[in-house]
Image 1: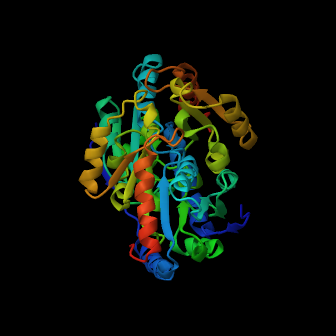
Image 2: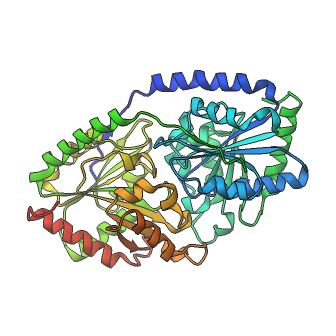
Image 3: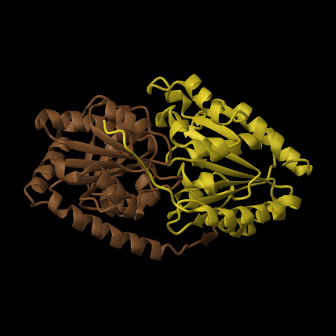
Length: 231
Length: 231
């Protein structure tokens, strides 16, 4: 093995600094809306849309009449907004026009459409990507990421930033763990080495397995925000 | 459902035009090297590294003594270069420093390290991402993508550009198709609607299932390039 390592750095600092300012501004403008805003991120195919649909259904059970909205960010297509809309949620589609992530400015344009003052919870389904969405703060109260079992337990080693900046990790498709060589304990250790505060919920979005603790956490945060005592 | 669609476009045109020029220059400089250059792309966890290791082992069986090199692009970490190196391949690690894709300039810096004039095949394992790597031509002879079964058969609808620009699609983890609701015929139809020329090989990189047709195709392209009659 040739042990050469070639380090290639790009100067993204300015773009990211501008975005951080815009994210702070989103947070400021959302402050008095009493609407919890979640940024949901994962790889393509990890189950973001299915998780949203199941989460909203479970929330409705524990808090009947809860008012929720979903912003579906996609490079192109409106498959997800249709799915979420069909499940009864208020949904808008955001087309990023080729961009691989949502930034804070794009997010604000979406939030204005959603009218957060009339809602208890807005979830942004970010573009399916474990890299750039981790770098671009969109001004959400919490960042939630999904890792699906088939992706492997080594992902914190490969995409450390996403695991570092997120507040909650949903480990999805947990029912398929026997099919893959997935070591949940090894994952947990790797995640907590990067981010000791990370909350980890093993779930199966298809069956709803494990959704109790996750939706209880979410309902608590919605309540805190509603009372103006949240983040 | 609020059927609002918010279209957000970014002006990436200039960056992409500059990259296209750099990619043409890579292709020009690689022309007389008689070394096939493959750009391998997929989501995180689709099985790029396992596929590379198995592909090189199978190639060695049908063409003993074949000289191969692998460039492992990662945001951070050298997990993959170690794995590929341990399997006996010439391997270098490229750290993109936070960038979610390889561009043609970064690629050329890696190729110079690899010394393509002494090799028959170089594979670039791109950053795990279905969005940006599709937009950035790196000057490879062929673009090969992997979609793993657990990601779902709807991915051509969500990430159409990747399926449009790639020459070959490896459908990996085909052994898990019964576990997921994966419709291979539906996938094939969606892929060929975007890209009628796409070659599709169902494989299982772990067991080697389906690797015969894929490595035969690759060996043919290596031979054409060696003779100077390739792309």
